[in-house]
Length: 262
Image 1: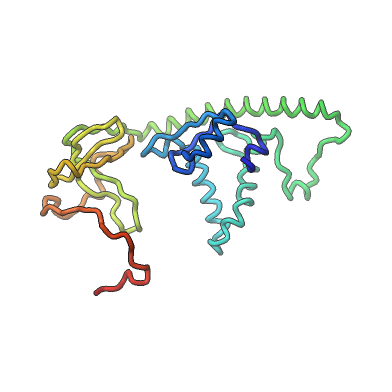
Image 2: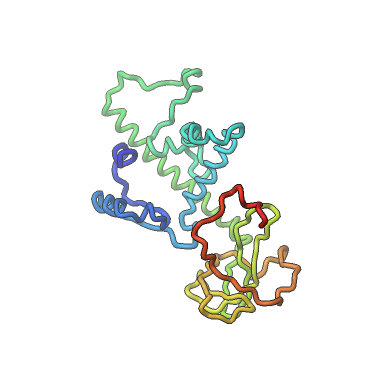
């Protein structure tokens, strides 16, 4: 409220993931008060908010370079990274974010050294306002044309390798797991599909487990295959049944005791 709406006004739409911070009562009341339409990305599918995810990756890449000597200074350099991003030409739109937002480029230290041309203060204010508005309209029209060109190009590149993954009951699939390190496995399984909840969500069990009470949702996105060819396990997957249960511990040992062996 104080940082964005007070400066730029209320937006027409607020899009976010389904995190608790965005679903809190204060956000709901704020959207109702300012008549803001609240939209959400689909669960299990971060690609639904791809624009934000792509920007986060770009920002992290910039911070990783700027904080190479001291990783703890990322918060101090965040504003400088945003200045660099807002004054850089975006490949998709063909203009800088500052030009798209304000209709003018940001004045940087290099502009002061190069003595870039400034607006004539004797120019009537009304003329300057209308010229700025016309400039913004022209920039937005240019952005729309550039976005269409980039969307067609990106779609063509994506469709070359895109495959639609569809699964049926009793299919055996591999589950992608977050890698804890370079040597950690990327897949676990195989698991057997036992129920289709929707085109992107399934229930599965292990091949040895016939207990239906232990089924849990498993999201699968388009482009994922049934079996990873390069990373199939070499061990025998038809071994003894392994009991899996949730730990009953409520307190965990401190980090300095992790290597302790009783």
